[in-house]
Length: 451
Image (cartoon, rainbow, N blue to C red; front, side, top):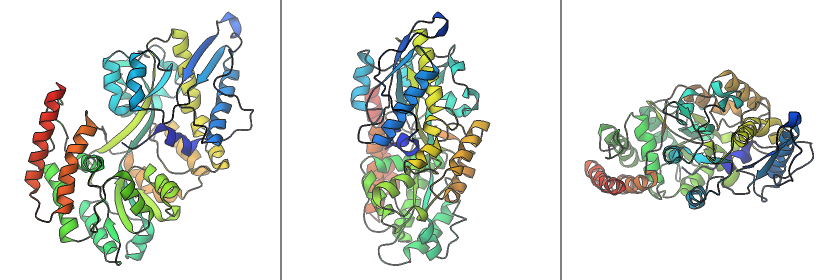
């Protein structure tokens, strides 16, 4: 939900020694063999406020154009790469780049409206295509046709404070794998003293509903029915989510007394060093350390407890349907060069480390445990500036957990489910069944308006 390709790129980009060349350079010379020059526009150039990352991008553009004479790459400065305020108008107005970023929640809409090019005959330009996770490739495939190249994929796990685990007499190298284990660990951490919270959770700002969905998926539940026309969260799995939170909050006293509403509130509390556990993807660690003052040595991440599925998110590059075949091939070659080559572009971890970016968090899993995925992970560990051993439990567990995308109309549904989350965390006597049935009625009414 609160993720950005721009933020992701900033964690892995680096600075090469080649001369800088911005994406708006003039046309290149024609390619050898009489091929006509081709110009493409590409999204996601880092902002001027990130000069080292921007320089790295420009160096990669220069290297790509040198390797592909006759191709000119022009970059757009929009950050984050996906802006919901401009995305629709740019697509509708024909102003979208040749290669543009689409979040996973928008794949189906873009494909259904014919706003992405069928790449099936060009996909060989992505040399490691067959090493991409099949379930991730399936997300950009419809009726046997390929419409995008997965760029980012993540799954939710359990982020935890290793220092607090040790202080509470828990083994930080064997984090809990069940909800019962989480409850026990949370009680022990909360018992460390005033201000300590064993398990942190959101209650509003659409983040409460977002985390409800994470926990629901883990238990095997669904937010919507298969046809997407009705709510499905008023279920035994949905009730189990609220019951666990109720018991941790009111029976165990392990969740503190302060309601944490928006994204920043829980992240700030986690960074303060007194919250033991929270649900989150690996980038939580990067943000807690870089933005909220956490000590990187304190944090680990493990697999989602008892996971039958994990809320996943991500993004893909798609190609403008107005692109010529030559532009499509050139754009895919750029995507392959910059985003899918071991040791190059965004996977140049040596470069990233050299410019001071955090390297080591396994925050992108498009390749899974394929040969390419293993090579990327080995290179990440080789150049890590972070304690990669703290993330090993997540790496081992995540590959075996099926991903599930956010539901359609996610933000509207999350806002509705916020009420149930706030209710269970703020009222000891909350009627959990009533919270779910009220949310169900509101969700069904909203879905009915969507047709």
